[in-house]
Length: 380
Length: 199
Image (tube, rainbow over the protein chains, first blue to last red):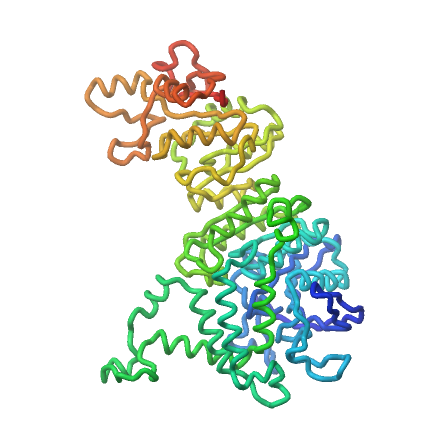
């Protein structure tokens, strides 16, 4: 049976005070739900998205004829749905687009109610903690006092962690995939390169490019290209592209040009960059990478992660992937160690997958069966 | 570790009875989590299993047992000193390259270590070697060329290793068909069992 997704919008009048001290006076959150909330309201699972995803976690959209739109599957459709590892026949699953994003929730492309102008660069900096507060308000509106589980990969995993820290009474389980307790210097460095690519694009106009009727697509393309490299592993890139040349080059030989596309990998990265620049907002990219940089729950406890987890009550499943160098297994083990020190109920799976960080979104039997087993034992 | 040599259920029961009720337990090489599940449900224990094998990790989760996927050859640095009341090392030590370090680590993270392994000095094994062949038995079911047991030892060998590492032997006995063997265990039991503490 096809799972049909329907996005919904919820408006919030109460101002949301942000970590920065600024406030959002009013805002909308775009979300989708799958499955049915049970009578006890105890089977809700919140799925948090990472950098470039959205509230559209699972299922497909229908076109005007009631037919599934091709390639409209949610970003975690392998994981979430009827009979999937996170089974929507048992759980009521919620996906929320985060504030500052560009897929429906209030973000830099929307009007600031105080000025009537498009926010652009004036959209306040948001943190993982801010997102979690906003998600908590949405759940209150939906009548959900406690989540059966919160789940996410990468930046989504950070939100899941943050839930267990900020609302220990309101979440029973957390599934944290390919995530980390904070970003390393190298990781922040990659984000900074991406941000510089965007900010130095002449079409960026200090973040107010909407007024100029242009988009800083060059910057976004490069940001995506560098990001994409870090989501893959050397092995998988070699296997997929190696030193393969483009077909035209293969036939005629090198063009001996520094500007032309010669190798398949160049062509692939440009394609990824082009695609991304078509749909993603430059200010959103800046905001979300910043939220990644700032996340560091141990910092409030003098860098002691175990102390940060002292008041946590949730049970955890942590998953990492051996070839993920952006959010490496070592980072998941830091989380694991802190949880073990706090005697939390935690399980940890280290999946031997070749796909690097991207593995968390892919269809890997061992990975999916680990998550499936964990949810099967969970009381809805 | 792939616990291919899952102790027969009678042996498992005897080993389970060594764990005080309510203990915080770490089961190193926990296999599918059978023993830990028994300890949690029947003896009110809590804790984690450690496993390397993907299928076993999944089996533990399917049982609702907390499991940590880890290669024991990498040591136990994840665990703090005396983090557990009991650390179980059942039929895994003989599969490890760094046996001696792991023994010390086992005693470090647990207030009590319970170690069990196939006793190579059991009489059928001695007989097989006297006949010129390596033993193939219920407890040692492998051929010499495909055995995962890269360390073969006896009850007396292990006692010497424990003492060398300044571990206190709280108890030691042989295990045969679920029974404790206390008279001449080095010859009459297929499995050796030690309860150890840091001195």
